[in-house]
Length: 238
Length: 288
Image: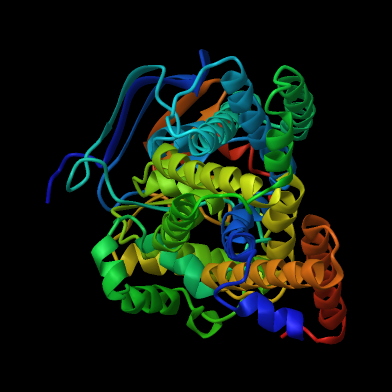
C-alpha cells in the first residue's frame, strides 16, 4: 500500500470566482485516517469539501489527489436537505446511484446490474428492509443511512460526509456514530467528515482541520483537541 | 364509435395528424418529467414559444430570399425545423449559463424570455407577409400537409429521442438529482446536461410544428404531474407520464374528429380531465 496520502492540500487558496474564502490551507488525508473538518457556520468548511470533490478549482497552491488510479474513488454523502424529495425514487434506486461511476452501456443493454453490491451496502447500513420504500417517505435518520449506503456502493477509497448528523435526533445520532465507527474499524475506510459540532464525533477523528477566520489549522486530533480556542467554541454543545 | 373505427383505418385521411400527434403525446412527457422534477415548469411555457419564434425567423429569412435547402415547400419546412431547434437549444444553453452565473432569478429570466419570444414571433411574421398563412398554420401546429418522407423522418427522430431517454436515464437522473454526486463519481455534468438539452430541444421543436406551442407546454407538464403521485421509480414515472400523454393526445384527436372542434384545446382539455380524475382518485386512495 502506498504511503502517499490520498489527499494533500499544500499552500492552497480556496474560494469562488476570484474571492478567496481560505488561504494557505495545508492538510492531508492518509489511508485509514478519519479527518474532521470543523468550524463555525460560514467559515469555509464546505469550500474545502467542494475543492476536494472537484466542484471548484483551487485559486492558488496545490491540491494533489492520489487514489489507486489518479483521483480517489469518492463516496459522497451530501446534507440530506440538498436532495429534492419530489423525485419518486425508491431506496434501492437511490443507493444504486453509487454504482453509476461507470458508463457500462453494454451491461445496461444486457440487463446486468449491481444489485448484489447495492443490497450489501443497504444491509450494512441497516436499511435493506426499506429497499422498496419511497425515499421521501423515510425519517431523517433513515434517509441519512440510505445516503451512506449510496456512498458505500461507490466502493470508495475516501468517504466524504457533509454534516451527517445535522437535524437528526440524539438517539439516531448515536446509532449513526456507531455505524461510522464500525465502517472505520471493519472496512478500514478513509473518511473526511465536515461538521460544525464536535462533542459527539470527537472520538472518531484521527485528525482535525479547524477552519475559522479564513485559515485552516490542521493536525492530529489529540493535539488539536488540546487547543483551548477550539474546545471553547464547542463548550456549550449538549 | 364509427368515427373511432374510421380513425384506426390505415387509409384514414388525417393519419399523419393522428399518428404525429399521438407520438408527440408519448414523447413530450419523457422530457417533460425533467422539467417538473428540476422545478423548471416555466421553461415548458417559454421554450415552445422560443421554438415558434425560431420557425417564424426561418420563414422570415426565406421571405428575404435566403433558401438553405432545396425542394420548395419541403425545403421551407426543413429550414423551419432548423430554426426551431437552433433557437430552442440556444435558449436552453443561455438560461443554464445565466442560472450558473447568478442563481435564483430563474423565473424572472424565463418570464422575460417568454415575452421576448412572443413579441419576436409576431415581428418575424409581420416582416414576411408572403408566407404568412403557411407560417401561421405551422405555428399553430399543422402536420396535415407534411410529406410522407418528412413524416417518417420526424417519427424516427422522436423514436431516437425516446430510446435515448431510457438508455441514458441513469445519467440524466444523476445530473438532475444530485449534481455534486455526479461530479464526485467523475461523470461529466456538462456532457449529460448538454445531451439532455439537445433531446429536449429536438422534441419541443418537432412538437411545436406538429401540435403548436400551447399543446406542447401542456404535454411537457401535465402528464408528469398526473403520473408523479402514482409512480415508484424514475422508469415508472417516465412510462406512466408517457402513457398519459399518448392517451390524451388520442382522446383529444377523437373528440376533435367526432365533434369537429379545434384539436389543440381538446388535447389540453383531455389532459385536464385526466389530471382531475387522478387527483380525485388519489384523494380516496390511502397512501401505502
